[in-house]
Amino acid sequence: EFIVTPTSSEAIELCNTTSVDLNLSGWTIDWGYGSTTVNNGVTLPGNSYIVLDDNNTGGISLSNAGTVLTIKDVDGTAIDSVGYGDDGGAPKPEYKFSAARTPNCTDTGDDAADFNTDPTPTMGAANDAAASRLGSTTVTINEVDGKAGEAFIELYNSGASAVDISGWRISVDDSYDIPAGTSIPAGGFWVLKEVDFPPYFNLDEGGDNVYLFNSSLERVDQVGWSQAAGSSWNRLPDGAGANNGWREDQIPLYPLTPSPNATNETNLNRMYIHDVQGAQHLSPYEGQHVELVYGIVTVTDRRGFWMQTPDADVDASDATSEGIYVYMGATPTV
Image 1 (cartoon, rainbow, N blue to C red):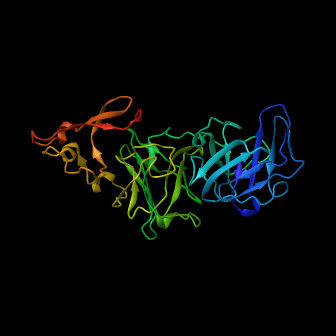
Image 2 (tube, rainbow, N blue to C red; image 1 turned 45 degrees about the vertical axis):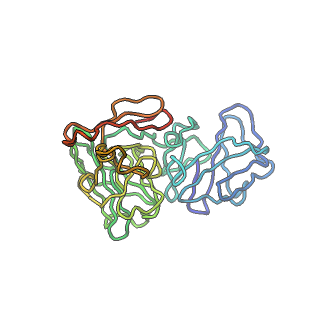
Image 3 (spheres, rainbow, N blue to C red; image 1 turned 60 degrees about the vertical axis):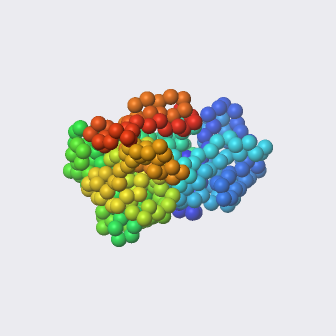
């Protein structure tokens, strides 16, 4: 468990799941752009917890936006680490919140799944944060525009039934709790407008993370980006992509003309396989990077995948093709 803000409260809790006491003297706390050392004589008892702060580990300085936090023993061997916010799947905690392993002391190596934010930190005791249940709902963060004066966050329900989102929470650097009586119909949208952002929301166009929690404060979705889109960041198609990403390339998100409360595909300049293949011996896009090529994946193998154009979108030319093999050099995850 760890707290990053306010500065005076920055602290890191370690959990010892063994029955053996650990001498932490000289251990290192590394946060990428700086580090500090645990004072001599500091011991972590077996089956217990210890909080590292200015009382026993001087100069802890954790980024509010995110970093990779690593604990190293006296030999410099990394014992544990967690990436949060801009640099990992664990959520960045808000002011006076913590990010905590849930269930208590769980470490599967998946920071997004192992951590959740806790509005009431339990530093020095067992964690009681709500579970991380990423991808457990049909409601996702579908589009985000961080441009000041035009900012919004759009949710989308990809399911076949309406979803009641009363009491759900959207978090950036502050929390917005969705009012009672709010639901999203099947295939519908709901938009949080900038005028309704809480005072310290601080949505940053140039790079940020947005987290979605259900009414039990279980984290169900998250998105992030590391650069300005020049427009808005979008899932394509609506609701698609990973629920545990923290950068635009991992989800993925695509920059498109903003379309709040409407499908992201409205402003999509979709490209098809027949456009890429062309009607001649060489592709008209030879040597160029292409993306947003629309098709259905039909077969995968150890090195790539086959995809084809849906029947409704094929062209009328016998000289072009509607199927293509995409070589990846590794087993695809599509």
